[in-house]
Length: 308
Image 1 (tube, rainbow, N blue to C red):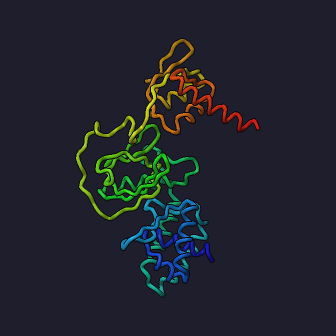
Image 2: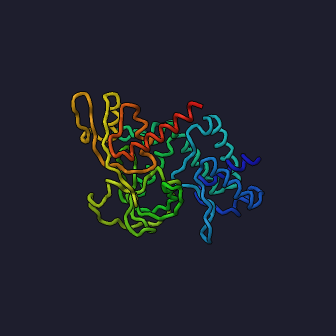
Image 3: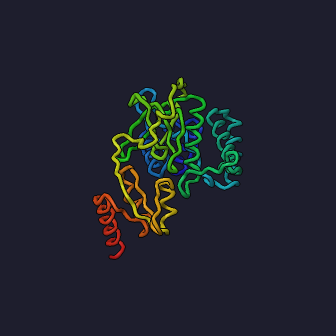
């Protein structure tokens, strides 16, 4: 019964996006405490659900979230929709009508290949992403077109959550990463937000007026606040050249005989050492020595872990 109620709550949220805990408690005959516990369990399962406090609060789900592809079989969808239509014939419930429309749209969406945009195949999600990232990208693209404010739960590199309302102006794609360039009401200025760090995005229904900006205003070098950088020189063997060209850019690579070199400035973040190690033995840090030492230390830690 517990999991049946959780699935039903999920369907409700997909239809209405925000509902009160009291609504769920009365509809399913459970306590308010159980409602909040079920919401927490769905969050742990990876569903972006938030509990908002205050007079306009409630339990809400990110507008970018959709049911995963293959959530139910074709036959299960058909049965569920038939049952809901039969029940709605007696109740004429607008919430149930919205849920029927939502499930019907899901079935149609799963029959289509939605990754094609004109002559370009775009899939920026991770392997096995089941289109969640694409749904998020589509949400922000529409918000930019329609000038609609978005409330986001943004996770920093340190794991801290902040809730912000942003006015999205531009999508930016750089180094295989998507960002949204938006005016942030928290910081009261424009910021670049990494889409992969946006845990949930909720449409506010409030429109905004776009502000003028130039391409030069978009911080395309190091977009994060307080980002440390490192000036590095690498020696690159032929087997690691494709990796270096993709990561550092062909224009930053010089060739001398059979050996290639790269000199560039990089963000010194938590991913840098792992990125260097992923290139293998054909990619060597020549300077600074402090960066080379960090790579050696991490390599020794990995070696010890796998040689137990």
